[in-house]
Length: 540
Image (cartoon, rainbow, N blue to C red; front, side, top):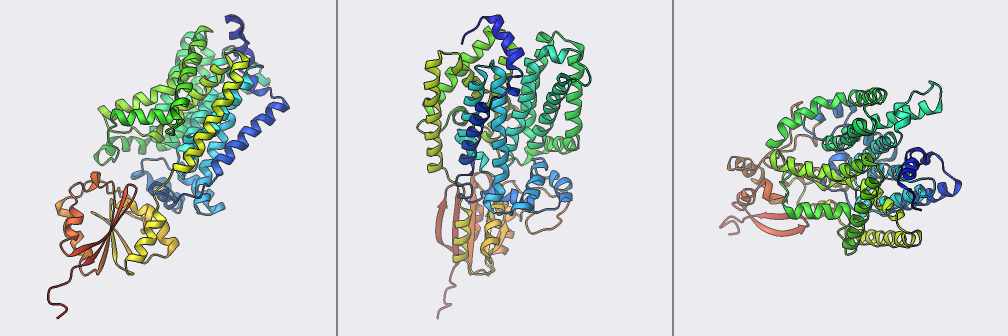
């Protein structure tokens, strides 16, 4: 399978760059098997876990008007409105059950599988490209972390799909320098193909920015190697520059409506942001989960991934495919580094779910690394790796759980009389409670501390409404006292009180007039119920 350096480069640029278009029946069948496997993994028990807080917000947002989503929502929600708009249309067709709400993310994730196959075929020739594509697609299809977020009603699977789409276009452009720099007939298939790939590149960049505001880091990580490619490998050819500038202009035009809200969040989000700066333990755990798994099989998978990816990058470098190597390294590592740097020197933004796409280049590099080894070895090793991922996926399903808001709501309904208050710290956890309170017909009163979340229950809140995320202070206790005054029973729900009520002021205020009846822990959520203190002499 090994070729000389010059023949390898020729295969990659002439055969590999377009080999994804040349698929035999057996290849189509094999890809369908991988897609079916990925689909089964993403739909398996997709409605089993209850909606957690952020998914509750997605469900609430999907019930708002399109006008509201595109005018009011951007004034306080850091995520762009496109996902919520799509979810609104999706739920109008399929309902708002847990399965229906999450299946949109599953669709985005399933649609990403063929993109990895196509990129894998580009990296190889007609013989090895199929193996690279199938193995890369299989790793993504069976990745526990991608299955997890494919079963979540949040925009992260959409972000991964958008990055894969942009990478697809960028990789084709890099591997087809002669076509991108050449002059093609207006009606020729070659010109149409160039326009298609430039369109995918532009659409993908715009979708990244419409998926998540931190997606700008992914755009930068992809754009940097493309600029290098134009300077060094394309030798600054004018035609390629014009075509790239047109694609960038289209992407900017598509994203322009969200530019104002994005800049507004950058200027104000640090005043009340909930994310904390990561320590080395957080960074290590995130990298382990992104590039392996956090299961007992994770260390073996992590070592295999990193060993083969380093081998693959060195192989690209030896073959003279510098831009390809730079593209994979840049997208795989640069966003992590940038999120850490921004978190320490500006505002904390480091989150696992905003970095899900960084293992796409890893899967491609690992698959390529396999095929650079003797064929008898890599076929067996590939089967072992896929088997390890299947085992890790089983461990994920056995051990993963979400916030049990259905249980919390049911317990509160049994513990509190109709009309009695449950205080929410922070107020935003009403998102998780509201969905199941409506489903179960819960009659207790839901109130936020230090103030109600502006959105649930209001059809048109003030245009400048913002989430209540600041720490609770002594001045807020007058409202707490009024809320619990005269109530026979009171509930208190706490989620991350270390951020919002570190001095336990809310509980101290309730204890002035009520006694603790019961305390229950639900992971990171604490539920405390109180009963009113008896007045001395009241029974005489």
